[in-house]
Length: 175
Length: 396
Image 1: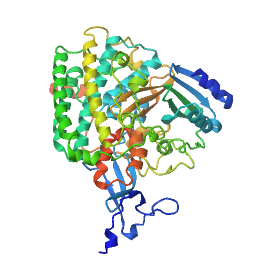
Image 2: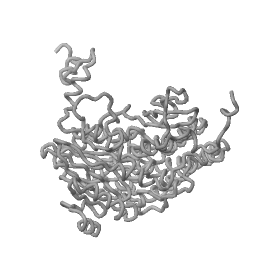
Image 3: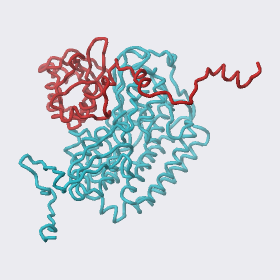
Image 4: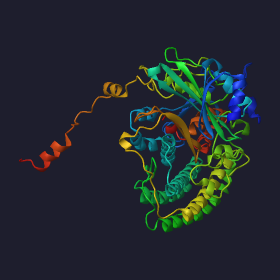
């Protein structure tokens, strides 16, 4: 893995690298170089399999972290490419031309985190949600409890009891 | 009707005519095309998803996969739960194989926290994962046969699956969702007499699978409908993220148990089952042979599993456990391919982000949409089931 990172550093600016375990490492690259770096990893280093593409919302730092997890089928190692993008104008370059399934990941990230991938096929088409009007639900500032209380009314005929009080009344009604 | 209309061109790639961009002009007003929904309520669909098909006659021209019918926001829910409270949630991500979720979640957590699992617990986890694979394969074989009109196979294999569910109930207390694996180990040792009962069940499965082979795999109709149908080009494996039996049937020996060994798999004797022709029949046959290999693996595990020993490492109080900050990815080989959990911790009692990587995510969307074009409407169910997809792991 160390050789691969050294090779990468000759061509791209790698902000930092962390070896999680023997066959898994994570590096941080800037938004501008990320797609070139991922293409290089796929075409020259042999990371042919895109395991997943997902996002983490670091709301306190006002950025999203995109994680592209790549797998090397021959060397059996994984490399996670982490890219930080601003929450303000959440937009990233598309990689749908590199892997067919990337467009599905990007469509999901657009819907769930509100991260745009201009040029990615059907990126604005609803994927899982239908008629969603709130802020993207997987963002940290989306309050699931508030949403469900607002959207789903308590069904009539249901009461909530304090268990201790309720059992006392049931078991010892005359006390 | 003129003779010209009845003329049949054997080369289906020329049909219908494509425009200068190589695409078909779908014009519904021409009354040649029809749009139908295959699912979400349809016996030939796997779980709650639907395919929006554009047909010309009985041939599929275009397909779009729709998911979201079972979205419960698992990944978001987990951000609001303590780690231990996530265990009843994770197993519900994939009903056919809940144990892979438990294993991947627990092992990712253990890696971040630096916890070593006792050997007996590792053997028990390996056993449970293989049992899970076995019952999932049995359910799938019934589904594949049923999608092509052989209902009886499903009745046999669901009976066999129930035998394994009995063993699950005995070992874990639950038939479908087990919550048997916990951070640091497992909940219990093998009950008395478990080995004997399991051995008997495995013998029954071996016996029945010979009948399944005769009735299903040697059946003329089954062969006629599956040989040469729904071929996955080996060149698609990496561009489409294909893993598991779908890749192995194309001759690519991808198996996480061999490629990135975990638990006690390095101590077991097995080779990934591969096929050559990559059609529906080969995928079904790879799964049948994989099932028999799983039966063999369970026998090997039963011979090596210790009767006594520690089954749980010492962990902090699970209700106030602050998992050290960091991120990792844990994977395992389920019946459908690579199953994985990407876990990010910010050092608090709650996970910062969990992302589930289910094999259906790639198989049921990008791959299925490509494969299904030019298929006959009668083969859609068989083709879809042959990919062994499961929608909740797409929408999590």
